[in-house]
Structure formats: structure tokens, C-alpha cells
Length: 105
Ligand SMILES: [Zn+2]
Image (cartoon, rainbow, N blue to C red; front, side, top):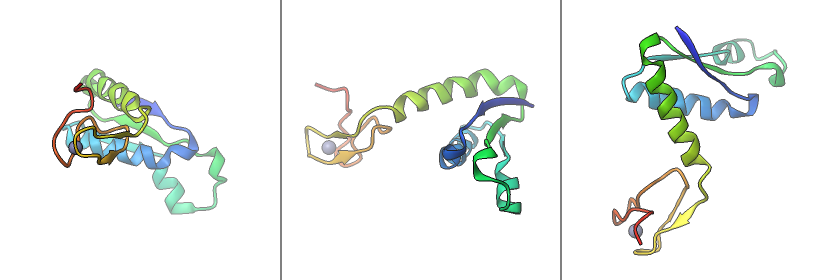
């Protein structure tokens, strides 16, 4: 088991989302510290840094690539589809309404 990423305490939501997405990609992983927070509820919030661990060491490089890709995507600004005018979060590459891709001209 290898640690993939250590999140900042305020990234707890991201941590849970990424865990789910990695599992959807067939990469079993575990979120540490998160359970602790839920169970105790008494630990100072700022001391808890959720950590994402990949169960199978051999899957670590692939998990790292996916994470890099998602991190880049979440830093993209929201955009409006030039075709139908629908607004989208930066993490989406294509319009869910009409299927047009963001990078199409
Ligand atoms: Zn559209």
C-alpha cells in the first residue's frame, strides 16, 4: 500500500470525490484520517489531513496520472458552451447538453 496524496484539511470533500473516482477507474484505495474524523469528531479540524492510499502498489503510477489530470481540470475556470449557452464547471471537458467539446473552435 502506498500513499498517493495528502490533502489539506479543507480538501476533505475533494478527497472523498477522488477516492470514489479512482475506485470507478478500478483502482482500490483508502482514505485515511477521514474515518477518524467522523468517529471522534473531537480532534481539532485543522490537524486532520486526509490521505489517499492506493492499496495495490502497482497501480500507483496510473493513479498519479489520473490525479494530475483531475487537478489540472479542477483548476480550469467555469465556461459557457458557445453552441447552446449552457454553463459548466471547469472540470467538465464537454457540454452535457449538446455534446460540444470545450476546446472546439
Ligand atoms: Zn452545449
